[in-house]
Length: 173
Image (cartoon, rainbow, N blue to C red; front, side, top):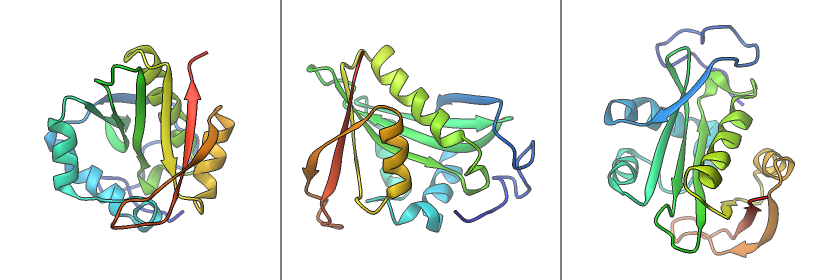
């Protein structure tokens, strides 16, 4: 993955070692600059469907979605979007997870992923968490599999990117 400076232009606090101080909170409108920069990074953009400020503004305004910002030492480091929170069948979608380029390769993505899945099962009462992933995103698929997600068929990709997507699920234990 490409290297880059932190959201404030410098290297993230703590250098390139493992991230130790991770905080996750609800994303606010003031955070969307960092969020859209991170998803526009070439290392992330190719794996995502629709992107941009309007997509995130809709997610923030939608009571069926939860947009979370990950911070390291008070600096935005990535984000997660959960959807289907009003789903009466107890199924939550992990819609998007992106780690900022300066924070990649430090274990942050795995920690963000675990936090999102635990939040979906615990706080939101989901008996199942699902996600979709492009077949060529080998790194993400390996992470999801190592965290107990199983492949459960394919679904059609969106019209703007019609490649079939792999459906992966995780049931509460």
